[in-house]
Length: 516
Image 1 (spheres, rainbow, N blue to C red):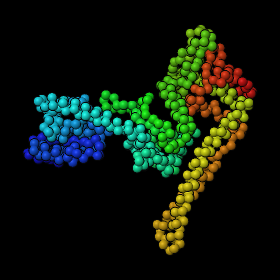
Image 2 (cartoon, rainbow, N blue to C red):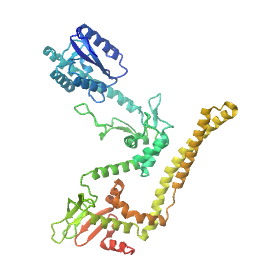
Image 3 (cartoon, helix red, strand yellow):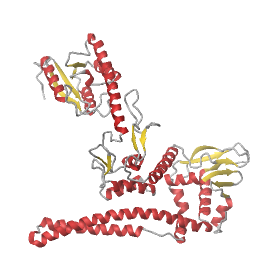
Image 4 (cartoon, one colour):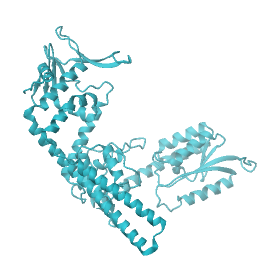
């Protein structure tokens, strides 16, 4: 669209901001807009675009969509030479950000102008701009301190301190947290499934299959599930001011936490027990350490555990590439060596073969079968509790569907059955049948383990561990293998004081029983 510039001397964009939706004083959005329009008309400025941010702090630019859109717009429209504000603190309440923007825009020939007459292009105004920027930051810090005092008073009374309540809770009229019975079952299930060994993906799938959504109506993701699992409010502990403070740029790392923060145990009605919460935290901690260790470019599960059988020193490891694959592609190999002349270089494939087969022989030795069966059935009991929860939710869903179907059939029998009602009945019948199938599948998943199951697991053990270097397998190897000694033979020491030598592998291949 072609603009008539004859009546205007310059083109401008406007920016408005309020820190809270409760602002109704002369800094409200309407007041800012009217003051800006009056100034533009009086000074022959053509407003070509308007930007704003609602309920956003001026101490940083994070989450200020309107501000970011304005800066992008100015990059694409060099014909715009003016940014109009009501007051300077609407742009920033941080001196550094304020001066950086003024300097950056000034270099592009863009003036920052306020309705009270400040102009960044006017050198005579710079001292006043500096004073206003400093005053705005000082006011923001003072306001922050006063706000923190109020929040601390709330915290001492164990009141909810703003924002969305944790999933599974609701805020009462007294500003305290109460259990939301509609969502609490999902929270309990999340903790129980994770404690039972299920992954974020499996938990998210179950929540989706059973109709649970986030507060905003979306699907659960790994991050939202992890946030729930880490929130100690679910076991009844009230906390406040846990996140680390903002840095000098006004930015905050939401993953960093203070070592010392306000907390009161037993101040909230718990959704899960402390025992279950602690069990989940233990698994989260173990997985966090393992993921950190496994993310290295040249990670190998036995790094730091391979020693020279002659001198006792730790063998140095290095990576080599060889073209031994079928398509002649480079294959990465880990090799360990020592300065002792009698010790040859040993590669990771040979070590893997020795260790995995040794573990297999020791774990699945006949004297361990009874203990293995007991432990698998103990794990099966935990899985049964998870399955029972799933079945309980499905039966409730089925009961609701049957009631709806019965009501619709009553309407149809009274002669009021339209085609749409008949179609609804058919859809409900299909849904009920689907629920029945899922309940049957879950019932069939319950299992009592026997020695024959141990045999099947043993037969697949080596192949599975060799081919699946996932988090669980790597954690298993880390927790099991204590030390590997290499000289003219290879000796593997397990953390339960079981020693496995080369004869283990030979004995396994020949079908002989291996004794510890």
